[in-house]
Length: 233
Image (tube, rainbow, N blue to C red):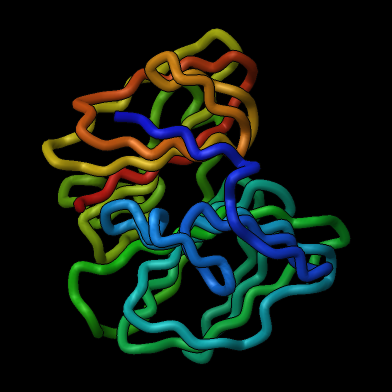
């Protein structure tokens, strides 16, 4: 089963400095039919204006993965971590027993991110933060694991959940296949471009909710950049 969730159907709010679209219920957007997808709880499509951002705030017991689509995001937290993550790269925060952080767009241009929250397998634990570059050329024509809590996944950012976050870039006309394990949930969003997922047309920033599928085949109708989450129920 693949359910299309068009971008125009997403919830969200425009705060001026932040234009946020929510694939799942979040903040002031409540939809009992979209409370999550397996262990995937949040997928926010955020557009952040230059020299603005999220002031210090707290999180606990959540794996928070930030995929930068355009621009860059700067992170700082109460553990002393600081970092700047550029377009195409990824940062991960395991909130664990609790962490306070801030995220700012300190650039002269607009920053666009996907922020993905996954429910961890266990509560508590020491909070951590990390970031890693993922050159888009390395994932040309193939899915590359960006963050994972699945044994055997190497050279990724670690998360504390039975899930993985993957990236893929395709040139127009190219295809790639992804094979799921048993009883898995998938959620795919093109950051850019238009694709077909098993023949279903998915526009940029639409969501495709996948369940009870042994595999999917993604074909680019134009140059495309995609993010996929594969998670346990």
